[in-house]
Length: 218
Image (cartoon, rainbow, N blue to C red):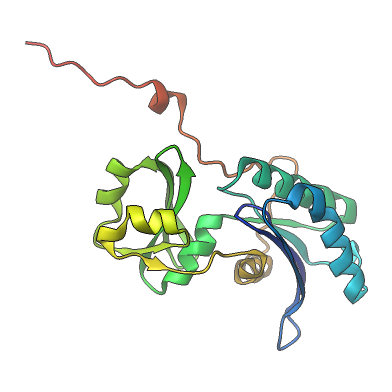
């Protein structure tokens, strides 16, 4: 199986090519420094594809990390992946960034946490590759939720906020880390619909945003 892997959600973007018929499956990769994905992504995809002589129609699927993360980065990566999928007539696979982070936490139930800004955190609870829950939480709700479990983070700010829980600090996941998910989904024939797939922004609902505390009567 051949995959084009794309991630533009984090502090750096990345693209990679993988051929699972080879012992060393990742055959090309390129990093997009800083938050330059919007300017460099398509050119980087072209370079890695040309470096291996691959065409879009040769791919088993286009794989993209669809959030949560930088609003612009998520949008750029997802839009590009959808366009490439449709242009090549190949399937699309979307992977949560929280799933990639949780996968570095070992066995059992893992809590993955990312900074969402404004005192909020993206939270994912996973068992292996199976998502149990994802949510946008404030610190007061997050701490009791992750207490007692394996907590995995990749950002210094989050590690500091959760220091009392001794989180496992790992490298920020990128495009290459989507490969196990891509292989699993492709073998199962579980692909996403480019026409309906949305970004994984993990926003709070209007009910949560505008909810007011109840006032006790009597």
